[in-house]
Image (tube, rainbow, N blue to C red; front, side):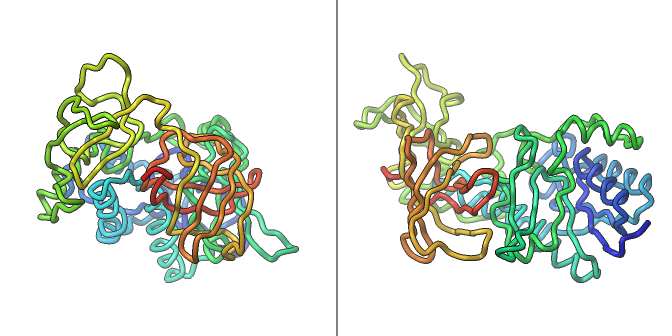
Length: 375
């Protein structure tokens, strides 16, 4: 039985979005499946056999839509994706940071560009296969973003940019399910991708070699190589904190804070990337204990309630997707920046990544890490 509501289902061809579509149909929504065409493999130099956004994925999504008796379309967001995700990814590395393109894709493509398309088509909701929950608080009149019940699959970290308006028109059907349950639902409904492997890598850098991708992208597009006094593509020195040269690096874009493997050095003790000096073209290496800091500054902020904090507040915060949140104090610096001080030092605070604030299972908001205490 139809409930009178219309849902636009973002379908990647994977099991999660397919089960989301199945659940929405079972709940009586009028559904349309869409796959977002985000890039051409040849244009960005990625093998079509390695990336998750293949013709096979489109075929899987189309098959599921047909099995669920719902219309299905492929929507072209290539230009928007390159501008809002790939270019920001490249720019952040060139500037010495480490980006999180999944956050940009959710923020700028799925819940901005796709939601505009939803409105144009006269639909009520955008539905995705994210593991997160949305509730509505009658007292405050606000929507609340919460962690998924399955803590091993919770994706609330990458959704902290959602606004009240977006939450009002978004549904996460999998938020109350465990991954094993989702696969059982897919199996019970005869979906061909019930046991399809999850995608692990960034979709447009499936082999994990970010430096190689950035070099190739800049060469193809003629993008100017900027960062500091030196080109971030130019080889330079690995050094200790007191300036001792340990060897030579192949370009600052190839390294990120906390990295130990892939340095190409034979060292008497494990050393990690603790800082990148773009002005001197040096990558500073140090022992693991030097990676722990307790203070960071963040910008590009979003608070789920839509209200900027008037003063300091206590919460739990985390600086990486897979990291457990830790107690911290967040203090506004001005209308665009906050200072976050953790009760205990955190390992590998990295500019370009996100810091996300929690109150129990509720997401308060978050922002982009601009710098750590020692920078």
